[in-house]
Length: 228
Ligand code: SAH
Image (cartoon, rainbow, N blue to C red):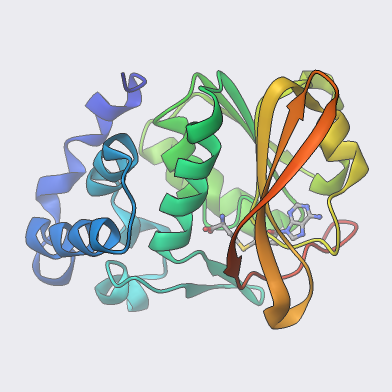
């Protein structure tokens, strides 16, 4: 079952033309499916989200390619395949009611999560990116998201624990404060490592502690400290 936002998201699908048309989007979904994304729920959400609204207008024609694109301040909107893979990995393990996202960036991954769970808590260290993402998600009427300008490695204590945590920038190792804010039975998906050597890991909090599983090799911008 999808959260309420899917109804609201249905309209923009038909408004795209040319490179943002329904057919262009469908090609991307087919590609994600061919690449091994099996969650119909995730594919369905991504089919309806207008990714071209999450990048600069000059890049809108490339929004439905399966690639990361620049969003300013040296950051990127993640590749659609990676967004789908991470979301699927988070949901495979449990059905989170609340998710903490670290690294709002463009807000696209935030929108995917907000379409699937009751509430998303999203932390971004770059004020300018956060404000832009907030505007986009507001204009898409996605209201089940709380935003914070801060260092996401510290999590968001006020609303912890979270059943799901997703980190979209790579720390060198799993930040302890984030692991501590994971609810028992909850799962956390994040890239870990430096440069081209990162691994996508899933950390699950069991009754006796944490279990870590390596899912894939990935390439993310680094998780930085402090705010900007
Ligand atoms: N999911 C985003 C990915 C953006 S790139 C998208 O698809 O658009 C990673 C983001 O993490 C950047 O916006 C960067 O500013 C942010 N980031 C890096 N370190 C951070 C930290 N410690 N706390 C919060 N955000 C951080």
